[in-house]
Length: 103
Image (cartoon, rainbow, N blue to C red; front, side, top):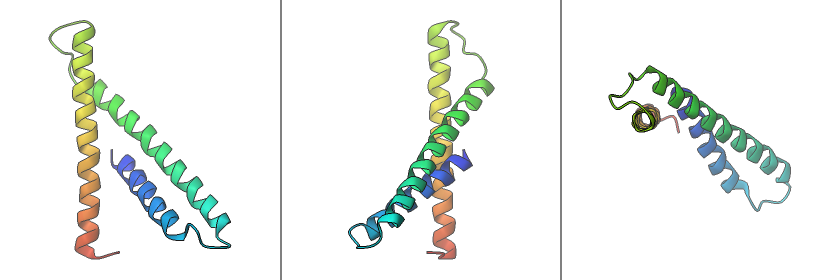
């Protein structure tokens, strides 16, 4: 979950950098580089989030109603837990950044 949060923060940072230099002459190569890095960071964040979801799903105990609805409920709980964990870690990163005044 932490790696997904880090790569999502990288994606946001690349978006901010892209927006700050778009329209400047002679920076087309930099724009392409930033766009590529941002896309890669987003793809990695998505893949790592799916892995966190699958890991959380496998660690949860089997639901009481067996069958399709039990697995669906378990998947919903795993999705909520993995997204909440990633969001909390991302907020923690931003709070540490604010406390240390890095940016």
